[in-house]
Amino acid sequence: RGGETFLSDMYSLGATLYHAITGQIPFPPQSSDPDEAIAEMTSAHVNSPLTPPNHLAPDITQPTNDAIVGALAKNPADRFQSYDEFKMAFESARSHLAIKMYRQE
Image (cartoon, rainbow, N blue to C red; front, side, top):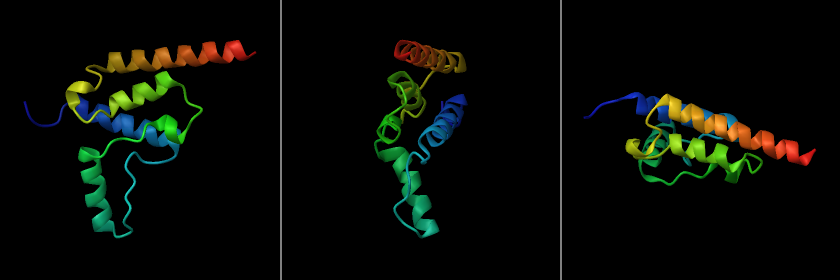
């Protein structure tokens, strides 16, 4: 089945979270020319490996990193297959963070 599905929205949400957490877009262009930058970013979304968010924001937990990376999987079949699955991954990440913070007290 071709076309856009909620998995496209999942990818967009992952990109938004990536930007919010790291302060950078997932695939920043190298060119300052707007037309070239758009072509670079489009190609990068399809072909370039993602820099894991925890490489840019080392203070985020591994479960948070994994949830964002999962939402940004190149192959839609590798992304979370439902919003509930995505939500559970972030709830688990939040629990890991709470445990980590509790142990530091």
